Structure formats: structure tokens, C-alpha cells
Length: 402
Image: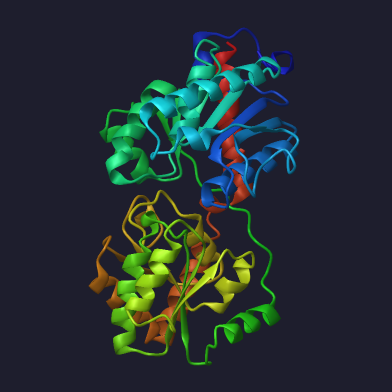
């Protein structure tokens, strides 16, 4: 299977060597399929593409499949397979329609796989995993699923899909992996692998000043920034309630959210109804992330659920203190040394945290210094983390070929 001719082993594969196969087996390259639901702008998509790029630079042949969008498609990547997995994941469709779409995608994927001798398939989210299971059911190809977080009431479903559709389950968060184990996933099948987040370019000082000017910020104004999709998960409605309470007590704070999403009209209306539209800015989709982070004073995340948000790591790298809600693996990142952690939906607690940091320059500076230091951890280093993925892949494929 795959690149079997390139394997090198030291002597016959004994039972002991089989157990230590990741150490004794090496090879030059693999043929890997990465499957995502869609390739809109987002943290999951960025993770897939960053990992893909790293593996390709190491000489592996990596192909990508999913619903094409601004970050993925054949016009961007010739090794991209357009696959309508977004229709499989569409909760608004009936089960019958989604099953029909899954069958169609599985047939397309099976035909594609017949022309490509894959060594391993890595799925991101449940729709890709279900379709991959249908397409590769009898192939013996190792199948991995990554848990990027889900609404708490859907964790049981993810665990069920993981048990029946994947050989191994990966997540960047110990907390989220444990939630799957609690629902019956074999802990021996799980592995925590970090987020290999490629650092962005250093911000332009002129652009940072331009951003603060465009937001009509005075030198004494505090910019409280969030990079969030405008959807239910990110709790923008909660953030608006927080902003309303904060601004009733301290007027030199501006809240800004960079991102788009299905609830954009709704949350804009909520801000207007709360009487804070002039101090709560919706920035839309932004490409100058480092500049916006550099222009900010506090990073705020009011999510209802997460796994391990890339946006928090980027805020740390920018030297920003972070106020976030205790969901998924967020508590593995945020504590009193780098910011404040509040309960999901705790408007009063989030309000108090914003006011505390906004009113104390020395405190913000100390938290920012700690955040910048934490961001240099191996857990977020792209070469280190992606190298761990590569080694993990190699060990799985090696076991399959022994």
C-alpha cells in the first residue's frame, strides 16, 4: 500500500518491534489525504492548510478534499478534490437528504482513491469522517479524526462517530479529548497534538496607527478586540451585553469584532438596540490580523464552546492579555497570569474582568508580557507540532504495513 517500497526496517518485524514500530521504522514520504467539511476562512481550515504545507515541504504527497471556498479549490491547489461535504453536514436538511449526499460523496471519494494509493486519511469533523468510512471501509487505510470542539450537546454524537469511523482520535486539547473518553471513546485511541500555528508577519506601525485612527480612538481609549465568526457559538450576543454594562461605567472603551457569519444582521441590531452601536464596531472579514491585534489593548472571547482557539494564541503572540470563557480547552491557555477566565454566559464576571484590565495599565502590561512568553511554547510552534503529526502518521502507517 502507498509507498511501501520506501520503508526501511532494522531486521524482521518481531512482536517487540511491532510495539515500538514508530522508533524502528522510517520512510521517505507518504501519500496523505486531508479532508475538511469546507474551506471557508476559519481556524480548522487554517490548521489543515498549514499542516498540509508543512508535510509537502517534507516531501510527502498531500491531497486535500472538501467543499471549495475562498481558502481551497482546484483554482488554488491542483491537488484539491471538490467534495460537497457541506451538504452532508447541513443540519437544516433532512436525514434522508444528508445520507444521500454522503453516499454521493463516498462514491466520488472512492473513485478518487482508486487513482491515488493513499497511505492515510485524516478527517476534520464528523461529516468527512463518515464519508471517509464509507469510502474506505474495507481498505485498511488508517483513518484519523480531529476533534476541533463542538456544542456540548453534540459531543456524544462526535464520540459515536469517532468510535465507528476512525482508528485514532486527535485533539489539541486534553479537556476535549477527555470529554470524548467520558462518552466511551477508548483512551488508547486518543492523542493530544498541539496547534502548529504559523506566525504572521510583523505588523506595520503605520497601518496600526491607521486602524486606531479609522476607529476614531483617542490615545486614552482602550480597544477590546475579538476575532470571531458571527455565529451562535462565539456568543457575540453575550459580548454585547458585556459591552453595555462596561460602557455604563467606563466610556473610554471601544469593542470591535473582526469576522462575518450568519448572525451578522441580528447582532448588529442587538448592538443598536443596546444603545452602544457607536462603541461596538463590526469590522467584517479582516486580512490585516497582526495590525488589528497590535492596535488592541485587550482580547476578548465570549464563546459558548471551543476546543483550543487559534485566535487566543495569536493574541498571546501579539502581547495581548486575554479575557475568555471557560469552555473546551480554553482553561489550558487562559488563567490569571495572562488574563481572566470566566464562566460561559457570565455577563457580570466578564464585565468585571474588562473593567479591571481596562482600568489598570500596569496589570495589562504584566499580563501581556506573560502572554507573549507563553506563546513561545512548543505546543504552538508549527515546526515542532507538525513534526509530531508527521511522526504520528508514520507510526500508524508503519503498523498498517507490518
